[in-house]
Image (cartoon, rainbow over all chains, first blue to last red; front, side, top):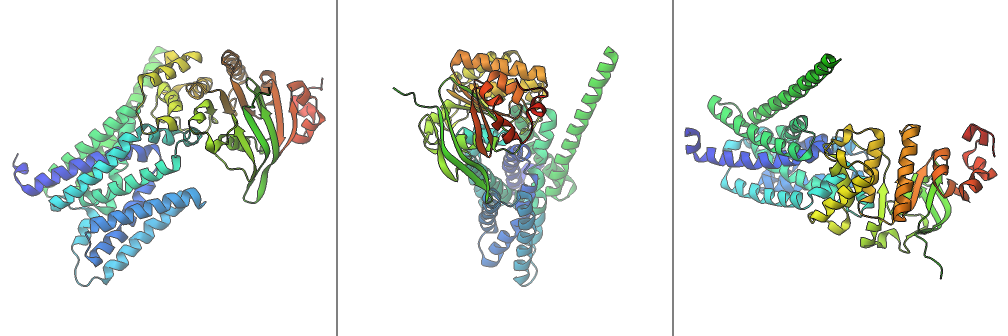
Length: 277
Length: 252
């Protein structure tokens, strides 16, 4: 219990709890809508926004957040109305956002130690201000998801039906992308630009292996997100390894266990059928 | 007193990327009719349905459902049930049969509001009508093709529409399953006095159940009762194919 006596660890656990809840909830929609590449694209592109903050003196989380929302809306809008494939746009913004970030950071004179923490996360450096920002983002994203859950699920399964039923499917999709962008920016503090997309895929991908019912898939996804966060953070404290990497590795391990569980249960079913014959 | 048509298109035209997909389609469908839209592949049948639903905007001309343009229907849109093609969905999506049917009730009139107990009852009643209530908790992807089609029909019916629009409902179904599906549809249509508009490329099956056919291939070639359409020389012109090849038998 010594781990909880330090202020920085208390803040780290709070951050991991909120980011775990947010990422695993959003990962449910990322997996169902096949938006994994979108998550990776936005998370890398926001380096441009973070660099703008670093150069101008604005909190990089705020500049990165605005930049992430702008990129997400631009990709969503251009793919819906600009007749350009979504993955093509993501590929373009993924690399050009990073290139912008690298170029802008090169203008800053001297050593820039924060860059490493933006790339790979540093949950132990989370401040109370960061936590307040995280709480506001969590409230906004959860409000959107809870109020429009059935509509988001419907557009994920059958967008054509949603439109025929008079739902603003494009606006809801853009709303989902904004929620995704905001989730990515707050997860950057915990796991960094490079690893944040993993938390937007793995929890629901693993949850999907455990259940064919979306309610349980979402529940498993949240439990896996929280479990990976707590376990990874504890492990990083005990063995002095980078916390972001430890959290992602824990989530990946749960995914492979869930996959193994699926393979084994299929084998058991086939064996049962053979025995019946 | 003249009855207002349920569906009316006036000189309806649609172009995509400068290419004319539909030209001057004039169609009138009255309450209680079961109309089959037929035509060869690429004739613009699905485009016509999408125009009726307001999913596409006409290049010129206009569409009226119950006397209103699709963008002016508001909550009256709930009077239109739609069943898209079965091929356009993910079989692994984690939904039960009842979850899929309930999606038919996710309309603009309940936007951002939770479902009531009445919504759940409507979805169950709809499943009962198509004989799938006992499978309500089964994973949707595990149903057979025919059962999935019946579940989609239940989804289209659960908001108790007056007009039902179906896009290629027999795609991917074997012949007995197609007949079973259309018999059920006909039974429900008669019991609830539904107006049905369905698209199919399969002439023989649709002609057996529809009481009117409209044959299109970019333009309207012929429309009328099934015997009138099937015996019209314009049918061969629309399909650019001889009658014997279309039906595998002599005319008559």
